[in-house]
Structures are given as structure tokens and as C-alpha cells.
Length: 357
Image (cartoon, rainbow, N blue to C red; front, side, top):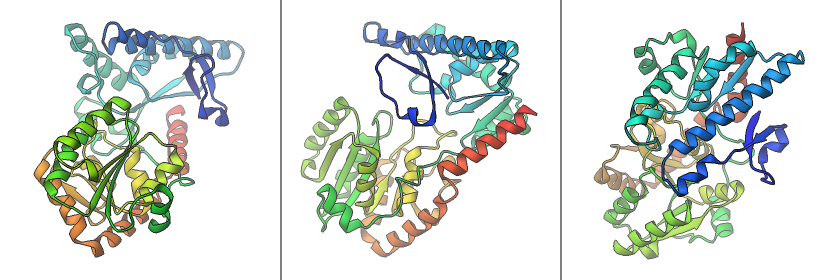
């Protein structure tokens, strides 16, 4: 595992023997001249550091068979650099960069990013898609189905597993008598949290509480202001960022878990979906094919993507049908068992072996 790291920066990946290369923090220049392009430069520099490290290993007789990469910019450069390494390249596709919300703007990037996407997709020796929904889109680009393995995201089974709701509520200080809706995410950007607050206000559920776990300070401040404007401040709790084990307690304390929106569509495979499923709680989420292929209709309350009134109706349905909630949670938990980290690792390794042949 090769990762960029600033001097003195801690990392959880120490426990799996990660190799750290110097992070050249070009992206921080975006504080002065705002552009995602700075991060493309930073990731490009990291790609060349990877190349020189692996080239040195090969010259010392330690050949690399397969490089597995989860970043489009790095994959783009490695399609050019893999030949002297004698390695095959697998690109795990998380989104089409030229279509993403985080992409750099401007005429130059509008021309370059589609070219970068196209080369990374077409010149990698294999692709790993998070969803089956993305596969026909790749085939429309002339990519053979044989070059694509579908490997969905997964969850840590040691952290996320069913827990007693009453005990969890006592641990995190939530009312036992309220219906608890919970969303958890490292960041709130592009996740539809503003729509969720508006839908929750419109649902008019006086004995319900909305708990939002995570988010940057600025994102939390914006949502607090929105909650005050909509008169639901007393029903909205923003916890800030928490450690994984504590996040799991908040999930266990909930009656319903929420995904109001996803950053991507055809490649949407959010970690939180699998973590939610493992907790054995009913889930409210947008009716996107990429999500529906993972979570059965019987295990969820699906709403029309981007439709506030549809989301409001789903929130009300969750409160008004408590017996259905238990059944949905059980089905979701049973469906989660094939999406553990171990199961995913086995699929990744099997695909690497096939591509290396």
C-alpha cells in the first residue's frame, strides 16, 4: 500500500504495513487561488513518486505484477508509466472526474478532464467498478465487459454490527421516547443535507429527533442556521465528527438511518450504506439503480431522488409503521453479510490474479 503523507502525520494504515511517500502539498495553494486543479498537480506528482519507487524495486529484482489504483489522475499517469515497470494496471472507478462536483472549472479543465477519464478507462488493463449500473456506461465507451470486475464497497464487521438500541441511546445521551433519524458522514458537502432538513421540517414530527453525525465546522454552522430558520432547532442534534466506534453507537441508537443524496449516481456505493445495513436498522435513501442493486426494496424506504416531498413522505412512513421498521432492518442486516471488508479483499485479490495472467 502506497500513500502520501506529510512529515509527522499519523495514519491508521501503519497497522497494515503501508509505505509512505512524501506528500507535496500543492493542493494547499487552493487557499490562495481556489481551484481543484492544484490537487490534480499534487496527485500527478505522487504518481511519479510511485513510478520511481516501483522502478527502483524492479531494478533490484522485485517485480510488481499489478498496480491497483483508486484515483483517476494517478491512473492516467500510470497508463503511460506502467510499461517500464512491467506491471499491469487496475483502475477502481469511483466517479467520472469530468462529471464530478469536485472537478476543476474553467475552459482548460473542461477539455483536459474528459481526455484524462477516457485514457484511464481505456488504457488500464482492468477496471474495478463499484456498481453493476456503471458497467453498461463503460461498454458504451467501447470497453469490453471482460475487462471489468464489479466489486462493491464494504464495511468493517468488527465495528459495525447490531447493538441494543436502548443501551446505545443511554451511551450517547439520546431520548428513549423519541423516534430517532440519523445521518453519519465525514463531510456533508453534496450529500443533500439541506434538503433533508427542509423535508424533516415539512414532515411535522414533534416526537422525532434528527441526529447528524460528522461534518466540517462550516457545514455544521450552516445547518444550525437553517434549522433555526425552519423552527426545528430543538429537534436537530449536530454531534460533530466522532470516532468509528462512537459513530456505530449513534447508528445503533437510531430507528431509521438516512442517505438523502449521493455525490455520484451510476458509481454510487457509499460506505455508509453498508455500515447502515450491518446495524440492522431500516434505511431511507434515494431510488438510484446503483443503490437498489445492493439493498432490496423490502429492506428500505426509497424516495424519488432530489424530491423533497417524496423524502418527507418517507420520513412520515418510517414513523407511522414501526412494525415494518423491524422487518426492514432484519432484511438489511442479512443482506450485509456478503459486503464485509474480508469478502471485498478476496474479490480484489482474485481480480488482480486474473489481470496478471
